[in-house]
Length: 316
Image 1 (cartoon, rainbow, N blue to C red):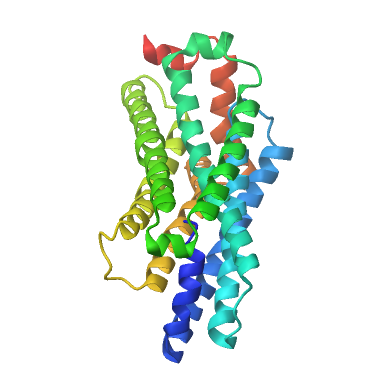
Image 2: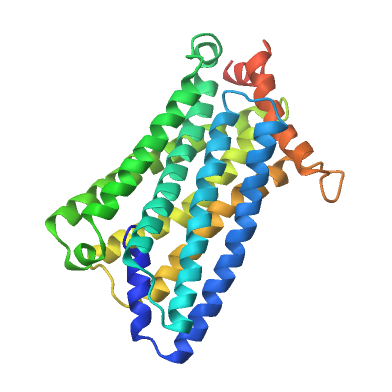
């Protein structure tokens, strides 16, 4: 959320030295987790760019990895600034904090939309295989990704300009409108689309598993959506409830770290999901990361080029 960085930074002013040490340790652990997540998403981006043939579908995966990397990078920077604030009593500049918040909000928002686009794209390929193979616009993935980046930037800028910390705490009319808009986009449009698309994929897996092994990419999508639904979705709901004063029992800085840890987990998990799904069952560690990811996305290429594909047969 736009106001999370400023709220956590200002909340540390009222904490004692013991709390500062505790929160500094928590921030440092979060920073280390961000590094692991950044490494994983960097590897995914490198493999999809240079090691695996680009397909209609892997374009979305690549952009999702970039969005997650952006989020983790700037959250890591924010956590370091908070450690500096708590240990050395040096307040980061308001301009730097605002810029960081805009960019990491942009990363998490774009990542959420990319995940929705991934789910919907795969669902359409299952429900309408002939259209997907023969009539789908050639550059739809690239065009859609461009629109997602643009919407992510606008969403983040509007959220941070219209609803900064002061407006968030005061509950201004403009900020309330922005919170309602964000809530509608998240909980009325994006999350239902993710849930419905994943439910359809689960149904397809259940109905085709008796005839043939379901594509690994289906499992990867479902696991990625599940991770999002149990980590980011509840945290965004809690921020909304906090704004509308539904609860006030948790301190702002504790609330910030709890929600940040969950979003760090979400943005870091995808590379490990791809490797877990694509690993060789007979090998203890599943071989190389490139080979594991190739097995995940190979099914996607097979479905798009094969006449007797699993998707078509599953709908008969």
